[in-house]
Length: 122
Image 1 (cartoon, one colour):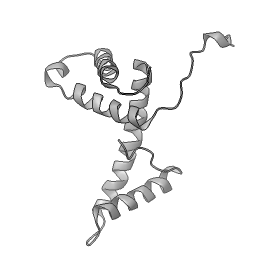
Image 2 (tube, one colour):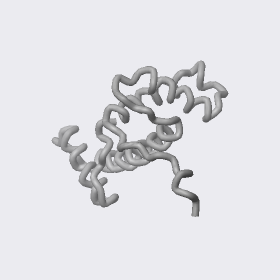
Image 3 (cartoon, one colour):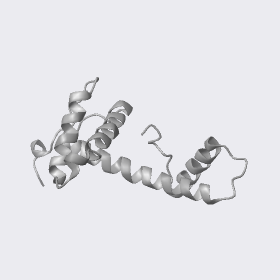
């Protein structure tokens, strides 16, 4: 068993503002065609980390690894939600509003995953 001092400090839960800025950083950096050609994954996440910290208007000291992990969580859950929404879209939904479809997709997500979809803000 490792000594307690070797474990890194675990920060507080991530905020909606941090999630939103992380998504914005990922889109701005990963969709940069000039940068994206031939760059390594590690360089991509360093640039996302720089963008995040250069543009934050709140207190945050998230590491590259923390942001990369959070992105994987957001991506995983939003992909599942998009799958639910795609299923709803294929149903005969004449007369249903977009909000009705989203509400039904949220219900489907909750039934499939035993938890509510937490990333609508993303």
